[in-house]
Each structure stands twice: as structure tokens, then as C-alpha cells.
Amino acid sequence: MHRIVEYVPYDSSWPDQFSVEAAKIQEALVTNCIDVHHIGSTSVPGLAAKPVLDIMPVVKDITKVNILGLESIGYKNKGELGMPFRIYMSKGSPQHTHHLHIWEIGNPEIEKHLLFRDYLINNAGARAQYADLKSNLAQQYKNAHRTYTTLKDNFIKHLVSKTGFNGLTVVQPLHTNEWQEYHRIRKQQIFDLLPHIKYDPNHPTLTDPNHYHFILMKGINVIAVAQLQMLNEESAALRILATDIPYQGQGYGTYFLNLLERWVARHGKTKILMHAARRAELFYRKHGYVEMEFNDKGISNDHIDLGKILNKQNSGLT
Image (tube, rainbow, N blue to C red; front, top):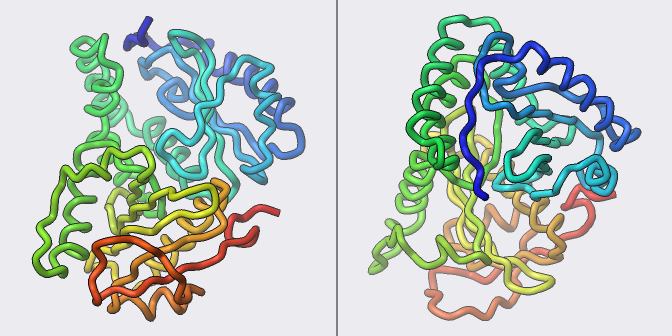
């Protein structure tokens, strides 16, 4: 059976259901747990919603989350599910009853979710607009859960902008506007500068499971893009890293690169290799990259092979 979009009036028991579940989650996470927040539509009094509790535990160390403990109270681990440094888990099958979004303290995603919740609580007009949108989409796409979620995205981003959130978050592009920005920045900052190479927005690497595509967002704006390839048990390749023109020279490239290194290290790799463009060589050398052999075909003389050995400090592991 597949998941359907079930949309119901606000249930005044949802806060109590959350409190009961939050206590179980805190017990499972023990001392690693700092707080547990009720987020999503069921956390907004008066807002009709899917009858699924969205719960956001905040932990001291995302690498030390007691997955077995959470599984023992009914949750299934779904991994990051497109959001680096998150642990996403669900309960209930085939219809979910609970979603866990676990973040480490300091991650900007925590602030974004809480601001979004509080904005809906405090703004009746926005709450009514959101309710109407969800009701209409639920009727049209009851049997197309992914489409329902996708078509909410523009309005959600509009509301996030209203909250004043301007933090830096990293996700894998999912929605149409995110992919459009990914392709625009990638084409302008990389491929338009390479002679005799035509950009292909449907290149096989875009769907290759060994290639991972990321966007860095400031608030709701995509400001940088990256592509990583998992090569083998020890190595990954940084294929693309590009910052949009208005945001260059402000440290965003460094911030993004550091996050990518941490992400690669947390996935068990100890080395990043790349064919760096000569114009970017100094940037990478400043961040610890040195000449390192990377046998790969089709590279021009305008590039240099660089690499970096990662360690526990890169991953954030202790």
C-alpha cells in the first residue's frame, strides 16, 4: 500500500500526544538529548493538517544518536533523506503517524523550523492561506503524496521569508526552483567558462546514485552549488563547487567546502580528490589541498589535480 494524503481538522489532542511521545524520545536519546520540539502543522493551534506529528529532537552530537533506542519505540531510520546532517525517522506503516527530524545543536535548520511554526501561530491570515492551499492540494493529489509536498514548496518558502530567517542551510535539490537555480549557477560559474563544452542539464551524473548534488541556501535563496562523487571505500571527488556572483568573496565558498568535507568524512571517506580549475587553485590550497594524483580522463591543461586527507576533525567526530 502507498501513502495517501489525509487532511483532517485540527485535533486538540495533538499537543498531549506530542508530550507523551516527546517523553519517550527523550528517554531513548538519554543525555544526548537537549530538547524536543513540536513542529509542523500539528503544532499550530487551529490549523487543519495531516494527522502526523512532526517532532524535532535537538541533540548534542548527531553521530551519537541512539538509533536502536528509537527503533525500540517504533521508529524506522530513513537516513538524511536529502538534508545533510539530519537523521530522519518515521513511525507508522503504510500511513505515517510520527516524523522525527533530528538535528545537532547549532544547526540553522532548528531556527528555521521554530520560526516557521511561530509565524503561523501568530499570523491568522497566513495560517488561513496555508490551510486553504493544503486543503485544495489534498483534494487534488490525495494519491500523489510527493506531488502534494512539492506544490506546497513555493508558499512555504514565501512564509519562511516572512519569518526573517536568513541562515545558511544545505540540502539536496528537490523542487523545481531549486534545480533551476542549481543548473543556472553551475552553468554560469563552471561550464560557460570552459571552451567548447556545452552544458547538459540532463547529464547522466544528475541521476547517478554515486553522485550527490547540493545547494547552499541563505534564507530561501540558493547562493552556491556543489557536486560530489563517491569513488570507492576511501575517496570522494569534488566535481563542482560554485558560488553565485553576488555572494562571491564573502566566505560562503569556504563555509560550503567545510560542510562538504564534514559530510564526506561522516560517510566514511578519508580523502577528497578533484580536478581544480587553475583560477580556483589558490582557494583550495588555502584550505589544505595539495597536489595529489587523480587519474581521470578528459581533463584539460587548465586544471590541476588536488586532494586532501580528511580526519576526525574534518568530520566533527570525536
